[in-house]
Length: 264
Image 1 (cartoon, rainbow, N blue to C red):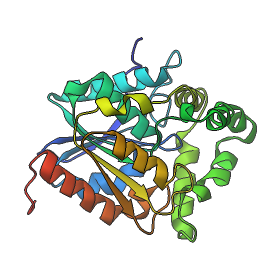
Image 2 (image 1 turned 135 degrees about the horizontal axis):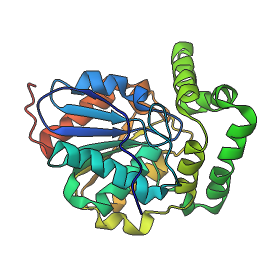
Image 3 (image 1 turned 180 degrees about the horizontal axis):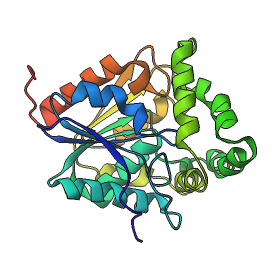
Image 4 (image 1 turned 180 degrees about the vertical axis):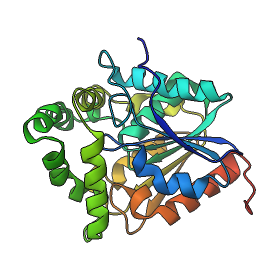
C-alpha cells in the first residue's frame, strides 16, 4: 500500500522531543491550537491535516488505516528519530496502528477519547459506512451543525460549539471523509493492543457520549504500559474542552516518557 502525499502540517516549538498530533474524523490541525501553544515550550509540536482533510491533498485511492499510519510515519521520518504521538478519536486509532506498524518511530502514545475501531461493533461499523452519504446529502455546514454539539459535554459554551462546528465544516469533504469513515469501519485493533509496548497515556472526557469511558478503559487495560485518566468537565473533545488539564497530563507523561524537565 502506498501512503498518500505528504500532508499539510502546523508546527510550533523548536526544541525538545517531537510530538505529533492526529485529529479526529471531523476535524483538522485547528483542533490542536491549545496543544501547539501549550506544549511548544517543552517540545516540537506538529499537527496534521490528515490526507483528504483541510489543506491536505485528496489521496488518489482510499488509504485504509495502514495508509494513514504510513503517512504519519513519513512525517516522523522526515524530522528524524521518533515521536510522542497524540491521537484524538479517529486520530487515536491511527496512532495505535502507527505504534503497531512502525514501533521504532513511536516513543510513546497519548490516546484521547478513542476506540479500537468501529469494526469492533457491527452496528457502529454500519453507521460509520453511512457517514459519507450523510455528508453528501447535508453538505459540510449542516452536517457539522448536526454533529458538533454531541461531541462536547452538555452545557458547553456556545462559542466552543460554534468553533467546533466551524472547524468541522471547513475541514471535511468527500472523498476524504468517506475514506476515513471506511478505515474506521474496517478496523478492530482489540486483538493487537497487547503488542503495543510503548508507554501509553489514555485520556477520556468524563462526559464523552461518542466513544465513552468504558472503551478508553478497555484500551488502556489491554496495553502493557497503559495508564487511564478521566478528565472531568469534558466530553469527546477533551483536548479542546479542558485544554489546560489535558496539557498538564501530557506534560506529566512527557516528563516520564521523554525526560522533559518539570520546570520547563
